[in-house]
Structures are given as C-alpha cells and as structure tokens.
Image (cartoon, rainbow, N blue to C red; front, side, top):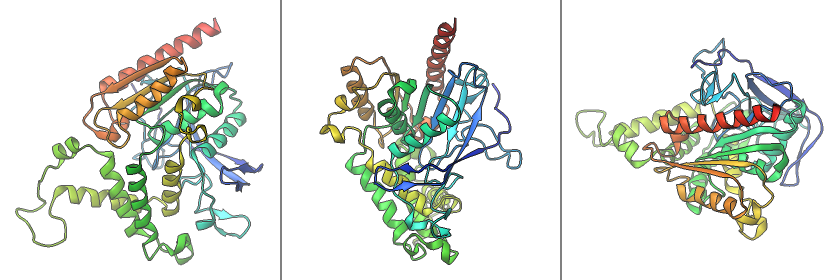
Length: 379
C-alpha cells in the first residue's frame, strides 16, 4: 500500500447565495477541496468524505512544500488501502465556516471589507450538506457511490441520506450519533465559554486587535480532547506518571497527562480559529434530524434509499455504541439494508482515526463489495 503522494487543494467560488437554516444566506463564498484517484467515464465511482470538527479537505496524501502535513485519514485512503484510490474517486471538502480555506470568519466580508468575525452566520450540518451538493454539481457528479464520515462527518453522511436520498448509493456512518446528548452539549458549551471569556476574544472580532484568544482555545481543546480518549487508553498511556521525581506542591504540571493535554491545547491554539470552533460546536449541538418528526428517528429516516454501513467502538463514551444502535434500529424499521459493526477497541472516540486491523479490514471488505456492484452495473 502506498500514499496518494503529493496533492494540491482546489477551490471553487460560488456567486449564487446559499440559503442557510438560520434564515441568513451566504453569497460569494468559496469551498476548498481535494480529490484523489480518477473519476470514471460514467462518473459513478465518486466517494465524498465529510470531515469532523478540527479536520479539513486534506484527507490523504502530503503537500510538496509541507511533507509533514499528512492527510488526516491517510491510513484509510490511498492506492491499495481500505478505500482504494485505484478504484474510487475520493473527494474531501472543507466546510463553510472553517479556517482551512473555505470561506469562514477569518475571511473578508464583502459588505464591510473587514473579516466576518462575529458576523459570520451560524451554520448547520444541513447547510454544509447543501454546499457539498452544489460542489458535486460543479464536478458533474449526480450520485455518489458513497458518502462517508466519522463523528461530525458521520452526521453529515446521515444528513445526505435524508436530504438527497437519490444522490448516494451507500452511506457510511462511523463513531457518530443521531443527536448530541445533554452531556455532550454541556462539554461543548464549557469549551465555548472558555473562548468567549478570554479577554483577547473581543466579542469575536479579535482580528482587528491582532491577537488570538489562545488561553480560551487551549482550555477548549483540553476539554474536548479528554472526551475523545477512553479511561483505559489514558491509563495505559499516562497512568499517574509524574513529570518529575516527586510532587512539586504547586499548580504547574505534575503529571504526564497534564503535560500532554497542555501540549495538545498549545498546538491547537496555534492553528485553529476561535470563531470556527464556536461555529462547529454549535452545528454539532443543533444536529437532530428527528426534531421535526417529534423525536421519531424512524420517521426521519423513512425517505432514505442508500445502503448503510454503521460502525461504533466499545470504549467511545462521547458517541457510544448505543447511539449507533438507535440509527441501526431506525433504519431496520424502514427495512433498509444495514451492515453494523461494534469494534472492541481501547482508544475511545479517536478510534475512528486510528489503525485497527479489524476496522480497516471491515471498511476494505465493504468497499470491495461496492466496487463489485459498480462493475456489475457497468457490465
């Protein structure tokens, strides 16, 4: 197996306004994306990869000028890998509101000539899916072979199956949920409050002050990162190991786990935009396809037509297997074709990003069958 090698991001500018669920609209916006593999003549082998909170369009491969920037799902996607780019045309799109190339709060608002900042409209999972559908139109893809994502990306994949049921053959939902629990919403709000309480936040318009609310971002990332790991994983990696030979009897770093979380927080605050963090966590909170059906997920998924692969991980307490069970039960109630796997992995929520032979082989087998289906349809 090899990497897709050096890749180059592409952009497409949209002039037609995109109506958002909030009632606002986005006009004159840009989406950044990457593609891997070749689109076949019939344009039937395209796979859309939807990214999670702090990821982007850079799903696989490297950049020639930054060889260390490896795509966030490079272990999954490439020649001979679980999603084989010798067979499939894979697309990664950066969502609106992000800080990795697509139009977001850092970019200039054409109405004011200044960064959007706090004026950037709140966006939802459904808004992102509508924007992705527009990009698919530009690329001439009327139906995806599959739409796939983990965590927040899984929410987008599930939304594709309800919003555009005729535009995907397969829906792959990994380590995700049909809606956030109260506990998850609480974690998100603590993270947001850390950011908005930072004196350098300036109501979201910190760009004008040439500062970054780093302290708030650090705490937000530390809170979030704790929820991505399992207790067993943290115990195995760090336990109660000390940085020094003994307690320091102060409020600095005593334990290895403290050092690790602060490192993660520092790194995150150096590259992620605070307004983007607020937007994306709010999109997570708002996702609830069953809301307009009085909480009935079976009714919410009644219009789906895709075949589904749903995967969960036993130690994922952020989006536990029970939440995937809800999705599977609702799909089966609608007599949909569903493959479900619950993988006993120790890594918590982050397991969907990591190398686990059972997980990778499951995805590989599923997409091999999908490839065979496409071959049979072309025959």
